[in-house]
Length: 200
Image (cartoon, rainbow, N blue to C red; front, side, top):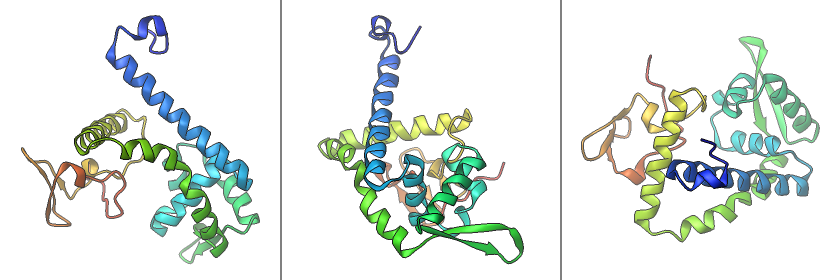
């Protein structure tokens, strides 16, 4: 059955959910393109600047960024070349391996992040209008979908609680052994800076 066939879609709630998620994904793409046009940047270049601003230097390397955004290393390298030329980033060579480098934002790059990071406000506003219960249910369901997509190899990188070695699932609430605290559903994280992957 075709998820995107309107004549068949109404027969399955699963198809309606997938179609709804596709609409939201399209909204993100449109917002990123609109923001990019204003500043002469592509969507991936905006996403790279945002990632570099809010993540540890250990993650700001070409190989990791390619996995994070599910694109080729050549695509990341080209974006890095352009962003360097524009003065938004600089590369710091690893003294132990001169072929490897970490990417950092310049002050101008940080200013650009401040100007472009509000692109998702249009999606944030309707979420704010939901009740607390609706937000928690939606959040929990999205986490479960991301977890299953990760297991299926569709989402290649994720730093959620579910895949972290510090996370322990309980019958009522979950627990983080790093923070040493009970995790209620809203406490679960999508992108945790302390995330450490469970050993295979």
